[in-house]
Image 1: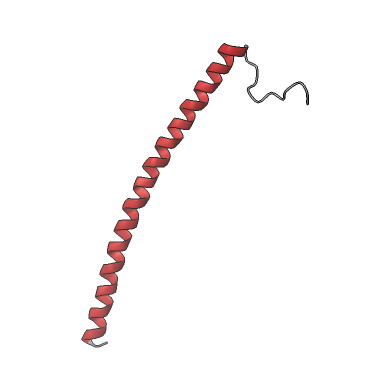
Image 2 (image 1 turned 180 degrees about the vertical axis):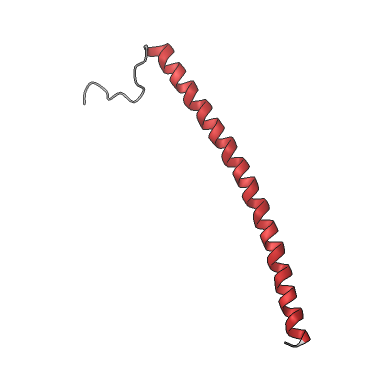
Length: 68
């Protein structure tokens, strides 16, 4: 291999390493957001269940109306 080819490969490797670090940071932020959304969904689900129990004695919120 000549020197130009080695330099070209080193440049490509450096760009790929930078891209990998950038993508890793993005994936980390997305995982944090997913964790927050998951916690919010669990909290909302628990809140809906508790409101359902308080309001209707455990009746289902998804109950089909009587005219069906």
